[in-house]
Image (cartoon, rainbow, N blue to C red; front, side, top):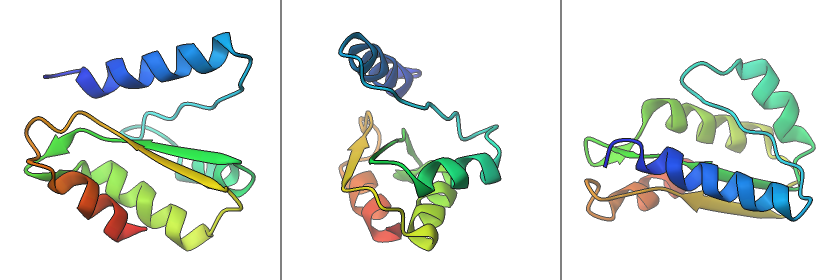
Length: 99
């Protein structure tokens, strides 16, 4: 299961690129919060992808979700993506609770 969320994200970004849809990918474990915030402000769609960590969301994703909530971007669409094999279905509920 290690790397499965990254594989899902890579597939999504690749498919979007093939269809001419611009995207900006952030690896949240090393992303600059200011750069992420500036990108969120004008984003049309936001997709959050996270693996399950201890039956919840990755701490870096939790921080990003709080940031999305604080900024209140103009995005009309929000997507959640992840491999929840270890999360027993709780990851999505916890992530949407942050938003």
